[in-house]
Image 1 (cartoon, rainbow, N blue to C red):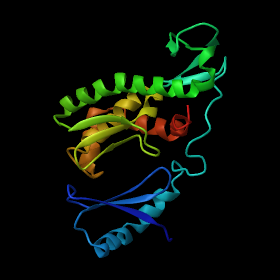
Image 2 (image 1 turned 60 degrees about the vertical axis):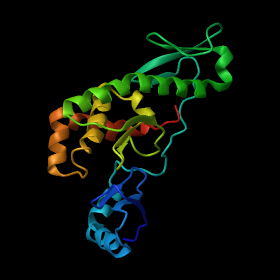
Image 3 (image 1 turned 90 degrees about the horizontal axis):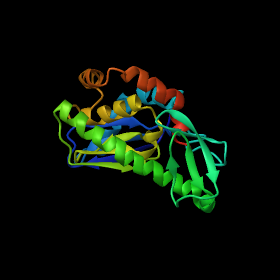
Image 4 (image 1 turned 120 degrees about the vertical axis):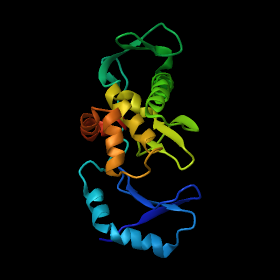
Length: 227
């Protein structure tokens, strides 16, 4: 099988690793001094594994960002793993109100998706960041910076500079899924590759790891809806 791959070099990286994103793109993470020959040999040695990952059913390309909801009264909106009813009201503040259901003032109808997205991002900062600090303390690791970001095909990432990033769309998932993604990225501060040791670390800190992975496999595309 012939496939393209992207090379990302870093002076902070000591070992070469390969990942396949959910859009089926292959990325080689390489030390700054790695030669093209070394990279090509690494790709060739893992060609079967890459092919298997690219063909995996949880990878998808046709609809990476589904169109999302219309956000009209009676529609349901996903938050922390549950669907909540949305209601357009005639009078209210120029922001979303949430109390067992979402209330959006009719004056915001023209930009309700933007307002809804902003609300999600705020909640992600509010609920995810404290859990990142808590899990880091329990794992005995430290990071330089933690950010909520707008990733296209990744729930989280740990950079060679020891920064951890989390997709704001995670706030739609149940908390046990959020915790798993947090632990997964923080565990990379202890073990850069997905070795047995890495998965043992994640499993010990996130006992519902398998349940969370299954949830993401079954519902991940829902999280990637525009809203």
